[in-house]
Length: 374
Image 1 (cartoon, rainbow, N blue to C red):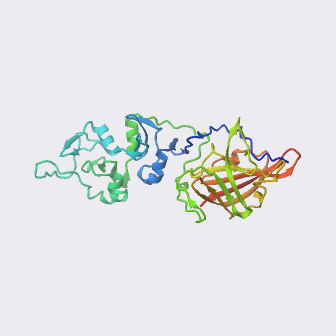
Image 2 (cartoon, helix red, strand yellow):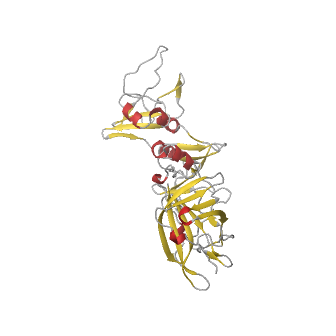
Image 3 (cartoon, rainbow, N blue to C red):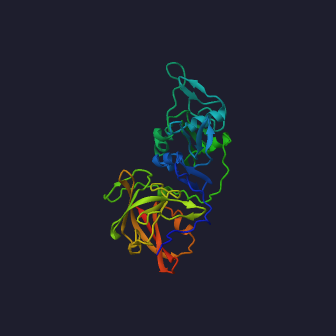
């Protein structure tokens, strides 16, 4: 017998990621923008929800370097691959009031009477040189400055506090605090700067991209049986102790919309173009149940897996990912493949093989094992 283990994917209309350089991309529903590396990695590693908010622009060219605008800031990618924040508060203030006046190396408020920092509403003081002192965090705004990360997030003050339209504001290197009678808020300086810069902000279509949800980006520890991989990796070995599977992994592809089979019936086949472990979405692996001339092969006992069983994926350095089985399903051979291989909202592993009755040419069903990473 043979086992045609995999599903037809012609209806998906997806564009597989480059096999040489796969990169996870996510669709941000609230702004209609896409967040991907290198900015995605920086966002995750630096408490992006608090520091940056959501992306509000496409990736744009900023002085010859890729950049992306966020609600509260702007990220720029350097030639060496690193990512840094620009001083969005300083840049927006410059854009609003023209070139700043520099006194003793400090910016001073300009002449405009809008958000561009008019004269402060507190009595002026001078230092020993007769010049205004360097701005300090306004006493009224100190609690909010501390709440929003202080110097590590907002940077140093670049203006004195001032009042406009009933709002007390102060500018910082990376942002602005606005305090109204109803409370304080962190100004969306990244969004304002994107508009000032005429950055591309038109929402795009989601297509088949997974939805961006900050809660999915968690640190995994595993269970101690294998070393935990700290980032995305290419799996080379699959272990399912409960059914005695310890198999090599070969890369399988999608050809003309059809998910191909592993060449070696004792190997598991990983669909590299869908996702890599460590990319916070659904990794898909398939294998034969039996094979002509061999009999039972790699996934012969996959249907015996139970919820709570452990599954391990290992990379070339023996570090990898640990998963716990969440569900085992038997579905018709004609099942919509999108329901099997799609993103599920968390870092998952999906295993596929044949099941049901043998018709003489193929099996009637598919066995689907879904597991979540720990």
